[in-house]
Each structure stands twice: as structure tokens, then as C-alpha cells.
Image (tube, rainbow, N blue to C red; front, side, top):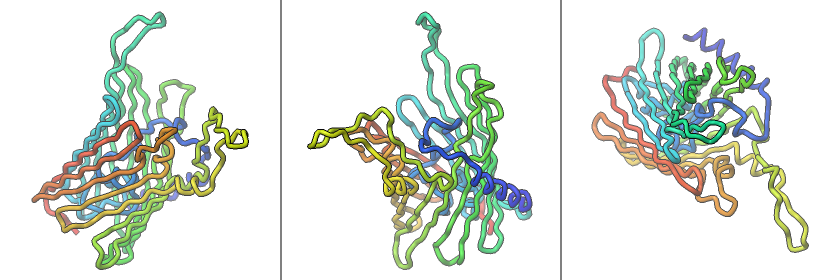
Length: 347
């Protein structure tokens, strides 16, 4: 694993410097569901996590280098309902081998429900299904203060009888200077890959590539742990201005339109999260994603878009994670993740 992971990580980092930058993020990539947080804990940290370790195996979706001994033989099932009939389910399992490192396996499934079909004349042709899913296999290896991780994904998108196929990968590294100190720094290159089979031969699109850098720290003698994640490091301008916005009229009668703002664009690159540690069996979490808050707000109100609140309750071998995430003013989503250990952890 070590030689292959090192080579892939180098290739992925090279891809960072050659990607094409666009100011608008949404609508420019295929398989955007690969960027969705598949579990309650990831959603609670603003939807991204490159550095915070835990016993939840779904965390390797944030960074494969987050695979650690606390996840060994832990299985997790996650569920979230988005707007309408859109639902996402995820299963993950982590285990360790003595010679080949630590592995994680995952499957996530997104169902958009049944949609109505019509012919050119407007006659009903019944319904058809739309769904997307991805298989993920992750591997990590620890050498000294560094943990290296690699995850390979096979993603499928289906509309009725049509299929699109893509192969993607995440490569990450986690730095933990001291084992007795709760401080980590993580870097991850996400969704570097290729659309193997598009819906239309001439409509091949890039995948939702992202580069994230994060740090997690728990101040000594404080029951709080803070996580800061920077995303889209390969693309500076992610501030979107609506070309159809007619602007507003000021007191002098002049039309004022939105313009580029350095501070707002900078803030869109950050997500923040905090975790209150109340013993080994309960934790409370809060997160904020400024990009989501700005992109998903309404014209007259933000409706707390971008904020997430969650908690973890652990009883015996079972752990339940819950997060309430406000995606936009018109609605929110509730994430549930249930995990259980089925064997003893290994160092």
C-alpha cells in the first residue's frame, strides 16, 4: 500500500496545479453527490472534515487518512432525507490488518424518487427512477507522526435505463505531532478522477474536485474541540454573482449591483466546527459553512442556512449520532448515524 499510495498522492497533488478554475462551483461538474456529507458527524462540522479523528468509520469519506484504531471493527449506517423524496443512505465498515494497513469499505446510495415521464405531445408515459450510488474502498498507513490514506470510488448515476459511470479517488495525509495531544493537521485531495461513461458521448464533465486543508485542536483543560477546514484551495474565486441581478436603487436614484468582495470570497473557503466533550458517552456539536450560507440563502433572508447542530450518544457498544443541518431557508435535513463495534480494536 505504501508505495502505491505515495505515487498516487503525488499525482493528485500535481492535479491541483493543473485544474481549471471557475468562479461558479455548482452545475459545472458531474456526480456532485460525491461532495455531500454522508453522515451525521460530517454534516455537523459544516459538511467537511480533513483533520478530526473519531471512532465513526464514515469519517474516511472526509479524509481517508482519518482511518484510525478507534474505528477497527466498527460498522455504521447513516440516513438523511433531503427536500421532497430525495434520500441518502450510507454504510461503512473499518478493519485493520497487521501487514497491509487499515482499511475502510463504504457504500452510499442517493435516491431521487420516481419522476413523471411525458412524450413530446405532453402525454403521460408513467414514471421513472433516478438514483446515484458509489462504492468506496479506503486504505491508510501510519509512519511516525504521519498517516497516509487513499480511497478509490466507483460512482454510478442512473436516469431510467441510462447510466453514467465514473472512477474517482481521494488522497490524504494527517499529521499528529504527539499521541498525548489532541492536535492534528490534515490535507486531502478529493474526487480526482475521470468520467468513464457519460450520458451523452459529447457531454463528458469533470468530477467535483476539491483540495482541503484542516486543523483540529482541543485546548488543554477545556472540554471543547475546534475544527477549521479550508476548501477549494485550488480555486480562489468561488464568489458567484447572478448575471440576471438588476440590482437595487439607492437614495440618489442610481442602480447599485453586487460586486466582488475580497472578505466574502475568503470566508467562503472556510468551514468551522466545535464539539463539546461531556464524557465518553455524550458530545454536542455545532458547525458553520459560509459558502453554503451565501449560496443557499433567499433574497430577503438567510434562514440560518449553513448552520448545523448535532449530538452523539454512546451506550455500551452502540453509538448514535444526530445532526440537524439547515440547508436553506425553505427547509433543513436531519442526519442519523448508528454505529456498533463488532470486535476488539488493534493498535
